[in-house]
Length: 134
Image 1: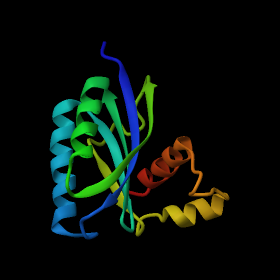
Image 2: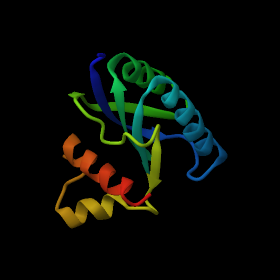
Image 3: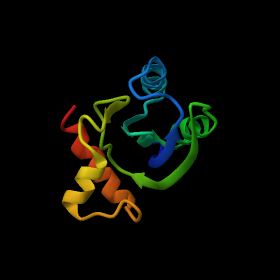
Image 4: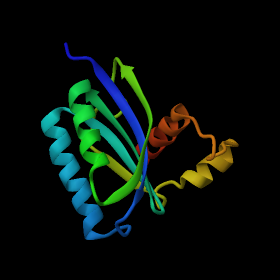
């Protein structure tokens, strides 16, 4: 069986929130991820994307490489890459939320979490929190 991994990253969005370009990002990601057996969650907070991708290692790394070269965002920073034995977002090729669903800033403030030093496991916890609301 192919090893499964998860990659968590953040990037600066160059598209307007709730725009046709944002819709295209999600539509293309759903199709691409489904064809590669990759699942995950994308959250947009103002002009910042946070995304968790999970699935077969080769597919996740290839998708992440294409994301790094996507001109619709910049300053892509990989926050973690871990080996996983089960998926966190197995029901979605890509699910998505924004601050209207749950604000990362509000969530962090309630939890006493500094966003300047947020850990990957804390961001995953936030994304799972969002997933329960979509």
